[in-house]
Every structure is written in structure tokens, then in C-alpha cells.
Image (tube, rainbow, N blue to C red; front, side, top):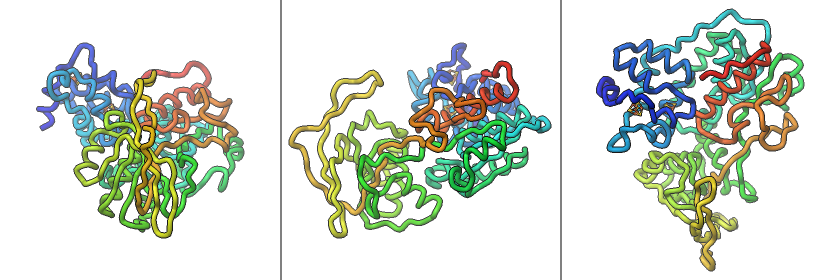
Length: 405
Ligand code: SF4
Ligand code: SF4
């Protein structure tokens, strides 16, 4: 019962939970409004900060974020903030009041969470947007990368319909630099925002093949192309983040022998703890403190040269350093290797190498979301879309940007 969940919240004068929410949700206040029986007020508080709770209330790593900071969690279970947020999202409408459209036009490249958040925020200020997306649907990495068992894509379909209703023009299957040039867009629009994510996979120098597959490539095949053809029944998934977990959990639904190989220990794994637990429960094996030195393709299998690793000093980023254990090299045989060891942005179409320091590149061009921050979480992308919107509005209107959240 939702009333039991909200009653458990102490309405703290200094809500610790909010320090753990990357988009700055006013958690205490929306829970208080619900406690008072005012769902519409709760929705107003939620949506004024977070335009996409359908996504965050299902995809956030709440154990590390909001709930991980809740004071109740110091002596027991934290308040179930994510469930409360989902309740508000599922039982209320986005209270968007959309003013008449102004003349200036904005093009957004990409249709992921950052782009959707940016478009929504601009529309609240009277600016419409045309969204150019190379896939056939919205959602970015949520659409291409997150398996259906973890997130029901009906929520993306509903967002798409709503964004169309308030005037967003979507151009799917359109790749910038191929179907239309960035220069064309810059000539046609008053502002162009690049929100094309972080799609370039780290392959550690290994050449992709039928058996050596990038994690994002595998997930795209399974989720978008609906192609579950695999080159065998044994897989190693290399990496410890959420892409690695999505790959491993998707594969264990198709084959019996899946091992995640991660160079640090469980404690350092960046993936959501719940995802790791689910993967373990589903039969995925874990080889912690191991790394791959080389890969050889031999006839119809792969031979991985695997070494043991040991943890060293903790660095300034709070993570333990790691080094190879001497004389620990061994060989394992498998049918496929899935590489989920990181990804980065590609802003070469804008002549940018690496990550820009500011959202604003020039008078017209902005960079937003993972393309700006590097690969982060859905909630951080939503927040970055809002942050970018404040700067885009400044450019469209002149004067001081509204930085309030
Ligand atoms: S947006 Fe995510 S981190 Fe923030 S309160 Fe909601 S579930 Fe928690
Ligand atoms: S820290 Fe926990 S108990 Fe306090 S306001 Fe936030 S959710 Fe409620």
C-alpha cells in the first residue's frame, strides 16, 4: 500500500535522500504531498524537476542513489523512494502547460533520455524541436541497449506519443553525416543540440568478428534487430558495468554457460547491485579479479589468455588500483567473447575530439547528455538535458539562463 510506504518517511528537515538523487528531486516534499493525500501536488513537485520519472523510477540504481542516502537506511530499510516515484508517475499525468510555439527552431540529434528531457524543457518555454534519430524509435540506449525483461518499452511508446502531441517532429532512420549534414542543420535551425550518446565501444584493440562481439552490438542485435543467432553455447562477458550485466542476463536466457569476467572484485563492480544479484540467481557465473590479455580464434572456438589480478592502493576516484598477478596466465576456451569494457562519445561530425568542456560549442551548437558527460546513468542524462536546456534558452532568448531545478 502506498500509504504505508509514505508513512515510513520521516519528512526530515534536511533530507539526506535528496543528496543522492542526481537530478535533484524534491523527494521529501513529493512524499509529504502523497502522505497528505494530494497526488496532483506530488506530481507537480516531481515533474517540475524530473520530466521522465517513467524511466528513472524503473532504471535508477536507487540503492546507490536516493535510497542509499535515506536516513532510515542507517538503522534498517530505507524508504522505498523509487516505488513511490513510480506510483506517482503511473497514476498522474505530466502537468505540462505548453505555450504557443515561437518562431525559432531547434534541431536535436538523438532521441535518448537527455534529448527527450531537453525537448520537453524547451517546449515548456515555447520552443518546438525536430529530433533526428538514426534508429526507428525513441529512447537511445534505453531502446537499443536495455532488454525487455528489465524495462517495458511501452513507456517509450507513450512518451513518443506525448512528445508528438506537444509538437515535436521526429525524423527516424536519419543519420547525421550520412542522410543530412550537420552544416545543413546549422543553416536551417537556430540551435542544434548533439545528444547522440556514447556509442563507440572500447574493444581493447581486439578486432570484432563473428565470435568477438561488442556489448552494445550484441544488445542492439537482440533488442532492435530481434536476432538471437549466436556462434555457440558458451560465452564470456568481459566487464563489470550495466552493459555487461544486460549482456550476461540476455545471454543466459539463450544459452546455459555464461561467465562475467571482471578485473576487480565484486565490491568495485559498477553495475547495479540488484542486476548482479539477478544475474547470479539466473545462473550467470562470475570470475572476479581476472582479465583478458589476448584472444585467439581457433577453428570453431575462441581461446582466451586470462590472467589473475590483485587489488592495490585506493586511488583519488575511490577505486582500488589493480595489477596483474605474476605468472598467473592461463587459457580458457569459449564460443564467444562479449566486450563490455567501456564506451565513449563520437563528436567527430562537429570536429570535436574527446569531450567538450562546455555544453555550448558555439552560437548555435550544443552538446548534451552522454555525448557531453561520457556514458552515465539515465537519471544523469535527464538532468543534463535540463541543464543544457537552460543554456539553449539563454542562446535563444538572450539574458540570464534559468538554472533552477
Ligand atoms: S530520479 Fe532516481 S535517484 Fe532520483 S529519486 Fe528518482 S529513483 Fe531516486
Ligand atoms: S531521508 Fe528518508 S526518511 Fe528522510 S525525507 Fe528522505 S526519504 Fe524520508
